[in-house]
Amino acid sequence: MLLKAVRSQRRFEQVAEQISKLISKGKLKAGMRLPPERELAKQLKVSRPTVREAMIALEITGLVEVRVGSGIYVLDSSKQKNKISNKIADIGHGPLELIEARKEIEGTNAAMAAQRIDAKILKKMEKAIDKMVKEDMSGSNADREFHLLLAKATGNRVLENITDYLWQQQQHSPMWKKLIELMKEKKLHNVILDDHRNLLESLRNKDSEQAQKIMRNHLNHARDIYFDIIDDDEA
Amino acid sequence: MLLKAVRSQRRFEQVAEQISKLISKGKLKAGMRLPPERELAKQLKVSRPTVREAMIALEITGLVEVRVGSGIYVLDSSKQKNKISNKIADIGHGPLELIEARKEIEGTNAAMAAQRIDAKILKKMEKAIDKMVKEDMSGSNADREFHLLLAKATGNRVLENITDYLWQQQQHSPMWKKLIELMKEKKLHNVILDDHRNLLESLRNKDSEQAQKIMRNHLNHARDIYFDIIDDDEA
DNA sequence: ATTGTTAATTGGTCATACTATTTTACCACT
DNA sequence: AGTGGTAAAATAGTATGACCAATTAACAAT
Image (cartoon, rainbow over all chains, first blue to last red; front, side):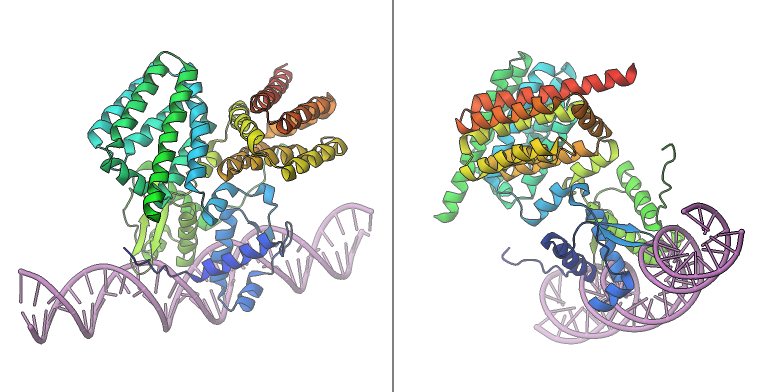
């Protein structure tokens, strides 16, 4: 697949992007009112519906606020919703950074879960391991499931959501697919399974320290595999 | 303020909400195509532009994908963007969960920063402390700035974004305002300042363990203050 | 100064027409 | 049978103009 899909950018996207840049550049500051929709349409040489669509897009992104009968206002950046997702969409995180963040946060998860996990989730994690044996890593859904269950076992929904978010980011990265392929080739499958099994054992023993240690080591594996991949690419 | 603002919900919002619920209920499954815009307009008794606005809203939320000339399709939930922000918007996290998550993640930040921080950021953190002395906690912007600088010092942008996200969540919670008030009343201001100064000192010494310890303790303070607040409320 | 009224501004919605893209069906040719 | 091209149908994209609804500003009345 050498060809990239030609994504026809719609007008409202272009308009939204333009305004968005003006805001991030500081030309449009928080609290300022944008020109009326009709005026924007004239200036940008597009129809008013198109401008409206762009405004709705910006509103949902959390960049502006629409006040009926009054106008459209630039929002204070501290009040902006999901800034986190915006940034990601713009630049994307490096795989190494993601793995490192996972190492710290999921390491914490493991330690916390060891003290709080209940039989129910323990059971589910066992099942996830079984499923992974059958799956043979195709798609690695069971892998993800295992890690998310661990996050859930912390009892802290913030950590749970953040962990979920980290995995989503990972899946979007092209490197992730390669990593899965490589796992199948090199039979790394079993290494991962062993890590999971050992982790489960320390959870049963409520051994926080060991659980954390295993998880951190587990992600060091992932980092090493990543280095293998980029070495191959450069070779 | 007993009265709640009457938020005139716009048509497209109602339409988007309705479709959104159908998806989360499973009536509309991933991959399914929605009826054409004209058809939806007829069924919902609204105009086509309104339907279009709703579709754009859903597209940006990451629930559907619009394919020109083909139709509008429900996206696979794993491909949905910022699921994290959606969840938050729905339920909101408990203050205790947020503080606990901060304790773990910012504790990690402190330890990591101690090993990687450079003179430049160190300088900025000093300035943030000075600013906080003057500010007298009004708004506590300097407090936030200090913590975000620490996150930046890790050199890991994922952790930086997540930390930023945690503080945003915090600000939206009503408890946070009370906490700031309480700080002013009880002169907790100085306790926080001392924590920050001590943390800075251990960063200079590149003492990871101590830095982490101080940060975790710092957030235990925040937790204690929270308990004071709810005790007062119940009394 | 405060209140009430009116007019102007601005976003919200609708109806309709036309364009651009994609998909489908069909046909001709091999 | 299969391949490729062509026309038609379906569908989203955009534009125009009109009118409604909410807000704001100006002004008059008290």
